[in-house]
Image 1 (cartoon, rainbow, N blue to C red):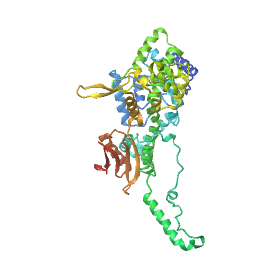
Image 2 (image 1 turned 60 degrees about the horizontal axis):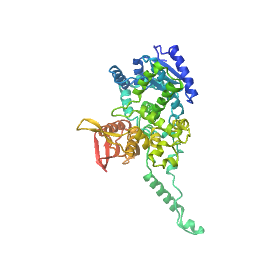
Image 3 (image 1 turned 135 degrees about the vertical axis):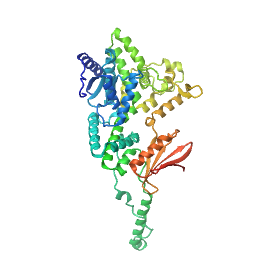
Length: 497
């Protein structure tokens, strides 16, 4: 409970929450125990500014985010109806000003999220006690502020936050390779011998000669040894392991890295997660625990706003729930398998119905295993694109407006998957921690058709230098030419390679 505030639910809301929780479980949802708290819009904005947590480490970014949210609410540009935390137990915050229909909808929506957090594979490695961990992080930073100084701590946190996306989102699911000591890595195999008869071996391959051959192998191994031995995508971990940082700097960077991995699955599953919660709150409000006739109009008005198209952007609620329903219809009607996929007649495909009734089973399977990229890649098909009138748009500078540039299915799908890959962030890897044999850091950018943002790249190199404390470089492609961008602590340099 938030200190200094009465956040307990009213008896009426508590009864609604209990009833809808029972309905959710009867429908097959598997949820954590869920604690609802009732807050006003200022309190909710505070929590939202902290990323959904009531306590975070002290930093100016939270104040800036609170101001943005407050102004957005004041001017009617946006409103937050609920906030739910991936934690065990799950904590959810309800806006006190919501009417009863909204409260019922939001509570049902929260249970959908809670089921997704608990059962989706991509959340399985997250810290289920992150509420406590965030409070611990806040305590650590406040202690360091007293020991080191506020300005120095805040400046270093700024540096770390600018690098927080330099992680390997698949790292939690990889099996760590068996560690090899440096001695093992440098130990050579037995050197090759000259051919000889057994009784002549000690004369043809004398001990002194074999020792010389073994020394050559060691020298060659030293020359060819790379650091790291293979490209490292988790750049934050590489910095923690090898950068010359003070202990307090390592503690802060490790804290930022932990939080990045905690939030990563939410970015990986935004469309699925919101689609799943919207699917279930719609199901409960209209079928499983239906609203009364006087409430349904208000609900429909609210629902229309949730799934409305967003000019110049993608609405994850709309795309997620509509694609889930598309999959449910297909599997209920048996529209899957080779025979269906090889059917080219649109009329036959549209009328296809084997009464399979596997829609609900398929949805729970999707909820368990998929993230946004795999979900869209496997289930977003041409029929769905035509039915939902999907298209690609570009900004027309001459007329100062967005215009449709393509309705081609393959182009639409490629564009969507490209936007979602690595959260739309560039994929970077450390390829040499001893570049030019001078302890410099070399990073490679996996270029997939989009150049790095120039100013962002320059600032990122500055912040990497702040941690690595030696010159840093990134190899990328700029205007179809391979180049290396470098920063030596004073100046940037771009050279063709």
